[in-house]
Image (cartoon, rainbow, N blue to C red; front, side, top):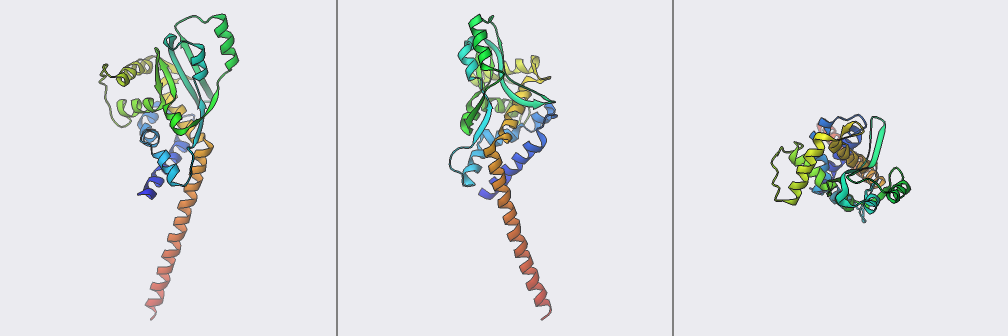
Length: 241
């Protein structure tokens, strides 16, 4: 069972590397969002990392909104996205739209932040850190993946929103973002989903995992090839007796 999990994780990571490039369309991201759900929400990537023999959590380098949250009041933020994806030659990160005019002090603080800040996240922290803010509500990466996979049709389509539940309230606001906002000439929801996937596969630790799994499968194939050759030789020798 462990070997099967490692094989599936390796295949999913290879899929993200090969398919989630700067030209991928929104429909393809929606259909394959269940790959992120399987890796980060369930969380099979962390399980595979541990089974493969690594000790500490893998690190993912990705843009963070933490500095912006120190500059703005959360309730004043209409929309913010961590971003960081490369899409058709453009990369946008730490985009923030506020309902209030910026004070001179805020402008100075924002200018100090620069175009974007990259943070080294532990894998669980990466999944649980804020990637979108909409009307004062923080949405983490795990929640965004659930929204696309479970609500928009990656795995299931569910257009109902039970506003008595906090997560469903976030989904209702994300519906508005999906209908109105673009980032880098791409739907804002799918731009952030692409950012999550690209940040994941760019990770040095994830690449280390891929390399180790690749060596594991090569070793298994060599053992299988030797075993097959052994039995072929036995069958050949027997046929001549």
